[in-house]
Image (cartoon, rainbow, N blue to C red; front, side, top):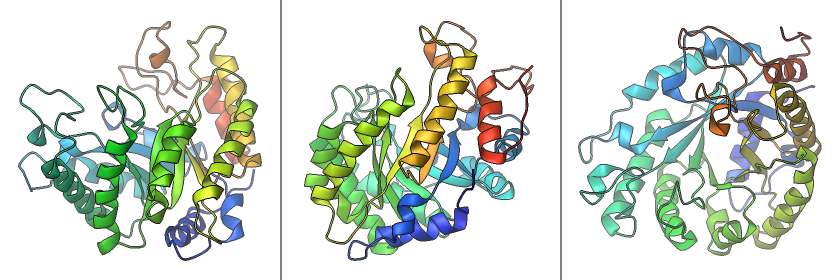
Length: 338
């Protein structure tokens, strides 16, 4: 499979960020691929293996709680090493500006610290964090994603509210765009293709700021069933997009757990292959597989079995059939799983 270069993708998405400009037709035909990573779970050699498998992107949380421990002071050292290592391995970063901060929450609040989300202080602080992050890594070809699955009660407790999300993200977008008009900002990173939630965002003007719409098209059915959902989403975007502008869809997270009923490692690999093919046919410019590494050891826990490689406390490289499937698609290297 021939892939567009990461530099070309960056240039095209940057053009799409300008509201008054039409994105080139080539944008919708681009195809690049990445994996979700958890910084604390990476072991030595992982980024090299991700690159060797043919991926050109990693998606990771750039959490507010990690960088602002004292109000108004930002420390990105936790992420700097990862960013530098990604650059050394020719991997670009999709960074999620996500979750709240205990500095701006009620004393009894717990992660994701949203108890004060409707206050002006919270809005100003999140916008300041977002601008600081973009300023720190500006010009490195990042994609900046606003939150992760805000339509999911686990990421936006106790109950998701699109108006709360939109108000917060709009203030952050305005602040970012004022200083960095050409950076790529996307949203809403919805759990599933939640047309109602996404339409609320579009109706309230988020396409004035977002370069693309990001979604997580999870399902336990065949990947080809996503084609109909993509068609509905494109029709929705067309209703709200400025005249002459093409707004791409980014698949920011999608995977299949080998612990789901009726699944195993080999079916996971088959569905990865089909998913990549479907997204290429649907002209999705960027597809991110979830996840790079299994998150746990329980073979029956679905959240533990989304990875391309198995979890190993010793840090050993133990690829699953899905890893070999991805490498074959992205690099043409044929390998048989042991």
